[in-house]
Length: 342
Image (cartoon, rainbow, N blue to C red; front, side, top):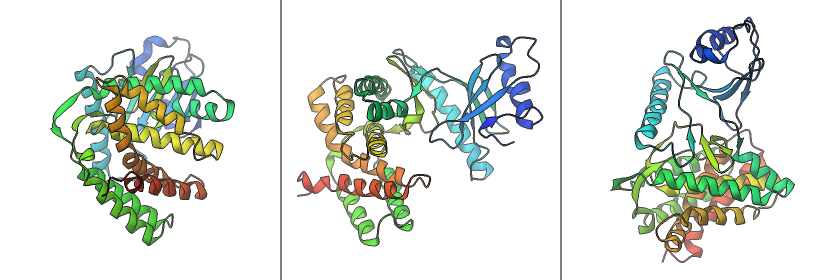
């Protein structure tokens, strides 16, 4: 069964699946007279397998996440599917769904099709506010949403494990992204070797190693957060894990850099928003100024990883992907500019 954008044909397998199986769990919301439903499917921005589904007559809206279309065997799909469900329970166990923020909890699960249905929260994605800030001068609105996101991430990161950070995993991922960029001719061989050397120098720094694990989102991209006033609704829990909070923060910073450049053509357009986001996070900590100093010192490493990660998206314009790898290298070179490598 294929899930794709557009109006759902009433004779299709997807129509009867949505009508007779997914909505069965929400039958009380449907009028008994609505025997011919009108489903519309919308793929969420920057997502391969998360869709918003709207039944136009009743107005019911929900999200479905389907792993069935992944280019992986059933064992891998099952593992990812189970991990997401486990992360939902992890959030519930730690009471993360609090402080006014909302976590999407499934109302329908199909382990045979690797499909999960979540309630849909009204609100706009972070990317919507980034675009409006750049194109329509809505800077205050974006900063307001970044403050809300900082509040949610700080609330999430308060759940700390006793063990220290294990940096080798992110190093493997980072080097893999660099090699992928070289294979795609986004960077040449000399730049790839320089990047790997800089990554190795970064991870020698105590500042990257001297931290405790905390609960992190693991995929803090704009499409995974919806905003309702001052509150955040989180809609994708697949990559929840234990790690360095700077991973989440650096990903938000990297996405801001990417999207502001994409909409404005100005590589410096995101700087004020990144600084605002880090300060809003830091001021919620016990020692705001020390926290801000430490987190912004670590930011270039995790932001560089994010830029290389985004550059791997083949649907982006070639020149923009090249620019992302350039920015990633500039972040890595901050190691020398700040004098930490001596």
